[in-house]
Each structure stands twice: as structure tokens, then as C-alpha cells.
Length: 355
Image 1 (cartoon, rainbow, N blue to C red):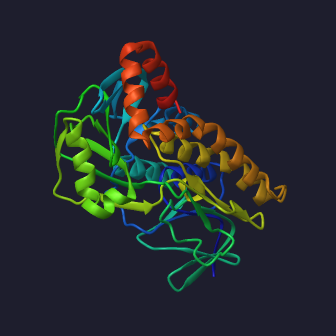
Image 2 (cartoon, rainbow, N blue to C red):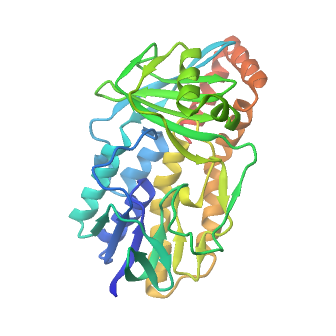
């Protein structure tokens, strides 16, 4: 059985940051990802101010090199459109960012196994028919991850009204606000599009399960954009994420050795990048807990308390906005109010995009 001090499962933002911090601290770290790289990763390309700050604090801000920037949020609804200024927001395709994080991790002396799935076992992880010892395991494989499938304590509590997440990157998009994040809100849910520096559109949507069932994920997403005057064409179907975006694990750690990080620990429907900010912050926060576990000073339950506290703080505004977006009548009322009182729109936009 091969051994490492730490194994990180999942090479997304949370796993990439956590693995990078560990490798730079001299910890023998293996990063495992079930998809081969370079990989195409749809949606999730937005970086709010807090997410940019997290990358800066962990010395990885360079991964956003070449990202486009916007400072405006435009929300479109049948009741009208609302535009508001926001803090600077970066847009970069996830496939580019994730690869750059891996490159930094490898430069720091880490080891990678890409294109293979992993499952948590007693004493380490199983990869195919190989068992790998690990003193600490960080599970950061997202909502659809399966690394914890053999650990019954890590169940899911799913919001009954939660939406389905879909997304794609499109080369052909017209009618969006090129200098802004364009959010289109309708009965099927809500969908956002932002331009990369190369001109492609990063599209992500949170859809009602009924809309997905009746019309399909791709059609519902493109339909929302069309309602907002945005025409997008993609040769690929929209990727369907885990049904039930808003969810939470029943546990965040096990035996002071296994820690669940980022989206794998829970999720709240995103609006303009809150999910990315939380993932990056979680990857940074878990570092101290993993180091404590490695040196024998970890206090059981400390990571769980940290997740509960930080997720509550970071998702408070998102939960409030999501509650409105799930109710078209309230959304329309807010749009009309924001047009009459522009200062309110700007204040809300600053709070949401800074999340």
C-alpha cells in the first residue's frame, strides 16, 4: 500500500487550493481527480471580489491572469430590466483555472492521479484496485462526487424546493450586456451569462425541476436566455449537475481524519459567483485543520463548527436572494422597485456580488 500524508479528492477550486497549501507546507500530498485533464468544465467561471481575495491570500491569484472583468450586473425580467454597478468581477473558464491550480500544485512538489475515481476507505483511499494510505483525506469532489459512497455517515439533506444546475460555454451569443453579468429570470428559474476575454459566453442556470422534466435542461436554459433577449447557440447539450443544488451533508468530518470541503459539504443556489467564493475559502480554511490533524493537535468537531459558521455567513445574502428568485411575483416587484429607486439596486448588487 502506497502512502501519503494527505490525499485530496477532487481538483476543483476547493481541492486545488487545499492541495496547493498543503504541498507548499511540505506535506506529501496526492491530488486525485476522476476526470482526465485537460478537461472541459462548463459554467462556474465567475469570481466575485471575495473569491479573488482568497486566491490572493493563498498566493494563487495568477490563475486569473487574462480573465475578463465587469463592474455591472444587469437583471432581466418580463417586468423590465435593472442595471447596477458592482465590485470588479472576473470571468474565466473553469477548465483554464483548474488546470492552472494543478500546475501550481505540481510546481510545489505535489503528486497527481488524473482520470481515476477514488473512494474513502479505512486508513486511506481506494483507487481502482489499489489502496493508498493517508493520514488525512480531504473530500472535495463536489455535489456529484462519489468518494464518500461507502461512508454512511456522510448523507445528504436536500432542500425540497432546490433547483437543478446546468451550464455550458458558448461561442455564439448575442444580446447579452457585454460589459456586465446578464441575469435572465423567468418561471423556469434563472440563468446568467458573462463574457470571457476571448468573447465566449460562460452560461449557468438554476432551473425548476418541473421545467427540466417538461422541456429538458438545455431547452429550459436557452429559453430563459431568450426571454431576456439573449440568443445563445451551443452544439453541446447543457450539462446537468446534481439535482437539488441547495443541500447539506449530514456530517463534515470523520474520526479527525476525513474532512469534507467545498461543494461536497453543501451548497446554496448561486446567483453571481457565491459558490466559487465559498469553494475557494473552504480550500483555504481546511488547511489549518488538516495540519492540526497531521501533528496530532486536532480537536474533534472543529472543522464541522467552522463549516457551519462560515457557510452561514457567506450564504446569508444568497439565501435571501434565492428566496425572491423562486417567486416570480416577488422578482417582478423587486425589479419595478429597483427601477424606481436605483440606489437600492446598486446596494443589493454590491452585497450579492461581494458574497
